[in-house]
Image (cartoon, rainbow, N blue to C red; front, side):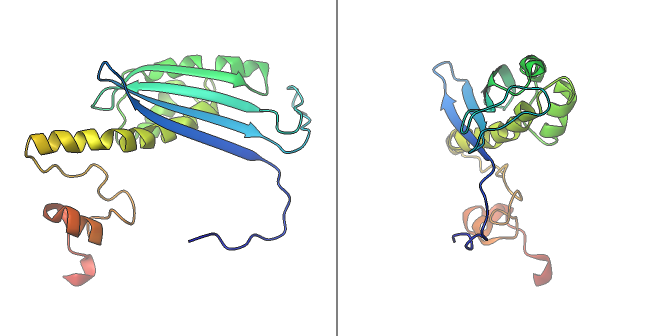
Length: 187
């Protein structure tokens, strides 16, 4: 369903986030993300950073996170090709503190703790959320294939993560009846 027509407005900022998932020849997985910020007009950086021309990258940041099948970070590569301040060049280095962290419950809290919000880059930190969800989308078919080979019906890790995949919903009732819960109002 499309959005309702917008009110009259003026375009001020564009943020593009792109994520891609890859399986490597060595059995590990690379998840890459790129964040680009632009403005459709000349931008004066009044905080002391460099001014930007219209559509020139204010931020252009990249992350590559290498994971094993258990979602444990094996390696991480972070780069900030364009940034508004000289201090921003220090932002990628603390991302190395994430090596060994597993994507699981409380992941983003652990990312903030390990990187440190005042020593790391807020944009690289927030990109880790996109890395995590892209990892699930990328790796899920492999997890399902492994479960099928073992003839084990595993509870989907994404059960109860959204309205469509709630444990008392139609998708779970039809696709994973063994994990289906009757809605509370039907008891």
